Image (cartoon, rainbow, N blue to C red; front, side, top):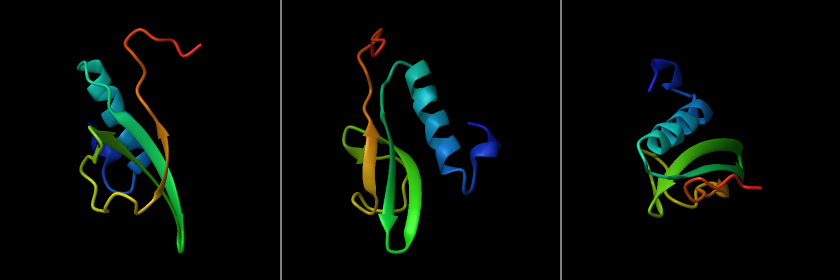
Length: 76
């Protein structure tokens, strides 16, 4: 991935990770989530039900997930 995705760039980093995985034949789940106290938003990738490279435990953010689709599916 690019160094542009380092640091606070969780959205860019998670999308780049998901796309890189997809280009290599795996299909992780891209997630975004929020918490309210204090308000924060975050994006990350999960594979086999596990968060990948995340400092926070599962459940730290309320997730809104985008599950992978089957190969060749268009989502129509």
